[in-house]
Length: 330
Ligand SMILES: Cc1cc2nc3c(=O)[nH]c(=O)nc-3n(C[C@H](O)[C@H](O)[C@H](O)COP(=O)(O)O)c2cc1C
Image (cartoon, rainbow, N blue to C red; front, side, top):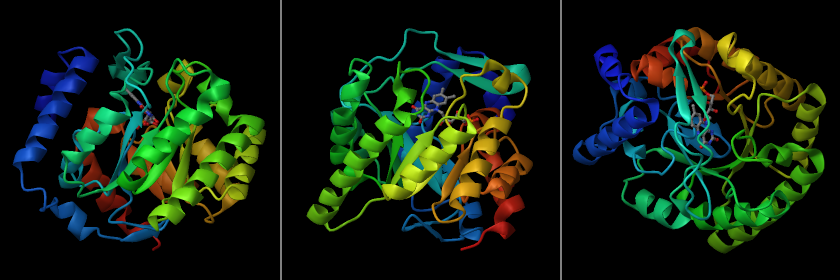
C-alpha cells in the first residue's frame, strides 16, 4: 500500500509532496479516533523512563517533518512512541528559496536545505493548541536567520519560555547546516554560555511552574573527537538531560556512501564519554531494523526517523519495534 502512495507522492517535487502528505496526515488525525493507537504500540509498551519521561516505545519522529506542529496526533496511530516538532523560530521566516529539498532516490537519501522555514512561535502555539497532544512531544527550538550569532541566546530563551509548558522536552538545535553560523554554537565557549543561560532560565521556569522540563541538545555529525568530548563535558556541567545525535550532515559523500556511519560514530563517542548517565537519542540513516539496532548497540536509548519513514513508510516503525523490542532496558 505505501509503495503505491509513495510512487504517487514521488511524482511531485519533494517539498510539494511533503506538504501534501503532512496535510493529509493532519486531516486524517482530526477525523480519526486518536485514542486508539496502532496495535504495535500496545504490544511493545516498554514505558521507558528516560529524562524523567515515560516513553511508550523508543521510536520517535525526528524534527523537521512536522515543523509547524500541525500533525503530531497522527504519529501515535502510526506506532511512534514520541514526536519532535519544529524547528520553531521566534519570528516567522520563509527559510531558503525553493527548491531546497531534494531526493537522491538511488541512495534512499534526502538533501535538506530548508533553512528553518517557520511560522514563528505565535502561530506554532496556535497549531499545537488545535491538536490533542496524545503523544510524548519534544519541541525543537532555533534562532531566526536575521539574529546575529552572538545575540542568538535571546532567541533560544524566548523560544524556551514560550514552549515550556507545551513540551515534554525541549530540544536545542545548534546543528542545522542551513542557518549561517548556527553550528558555531557547538564551539566550547559559545556553547558554555548558551547552556548556562538556558539552564538558568529552565530553573526559573521550573520554580514558577512547579514542573522541571528536560532539555536536550541536538548536535551535528560533522564533529571531531575533541569537539564531542568538549560537548559531553558541557552537557554534564550544565545539567542537560539528553543529547540528540545527529542532525543533517554537510558532507555529501557522507550522504551518498554511508549515511548512517557518521551519526553512529558520534553516538559511540558520546556513549564512551557519558555511558548511560545522559540518554542519547540516535538519529541518522535508520532505514531498517538492522540500522536501528546499530544505533542501540552504539549506545542510543531512543531513536528517531525521518528519511527512512519517507522511503519505507510507517510500516518501518512496527518492523523496528518487532526486531528490537527485546533489547530495551527499562
Ligand atoms: C527535509 C528535512 C528537514 C529537516 N528539518 C530539520 C529541522 O527543522 N530541525 C532539526 O533539528 N532537524 C531537521 N532535519 C534533520 C532530521 O531531524 C534528522 O536529524 C536527519 O535528517 C537525519 O535523520 P534521517 O537520516 O532519518 O533523515 C531535517 C531533515 C530533513 C531531511
